[in-house]
Length: 166
Image (tube, rainbow, N blue to C red; front, side, top):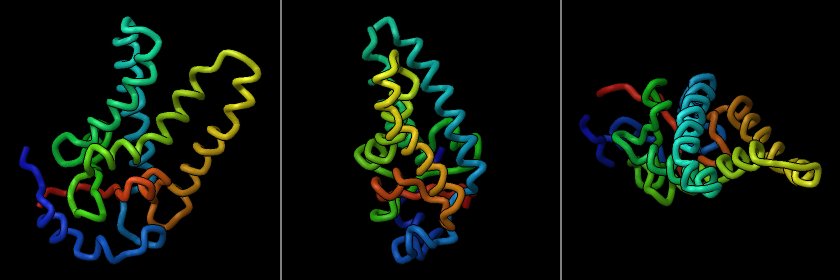
């Protein structure tokens, strides 16, 4: 698997740094993005269960580390992105995202997801309302903003594009 350098990203997306994040027509298909996230959540959930013998912290650490490391493989693709033909690009450096960018990009979604599935009482359920709102906001950005960018993409200065071999 050949890696894509910054220069190659600039050749493939010459207007990458110039386009408005919210109004750009570049970006991955929203339906493909939902499917890749679903695939990745299933994989990360299985990893969390597999590492649960480390203790309850595995349900917090494994998703945070997994989503970050997945983005650094190959061409900025997690397993779900690879299956759906998508990859993540850092819009500032025009290359696959750094570990920091991938972590920041995935942190809000991952924390919300963890909290939604790990509550045990009414008080915690009430505290989850902001996280449900976060997931709804992510969905709104994905489906109704022209570029299909997620809030995590804005925070991590990344974009998800359809990947086509040059």
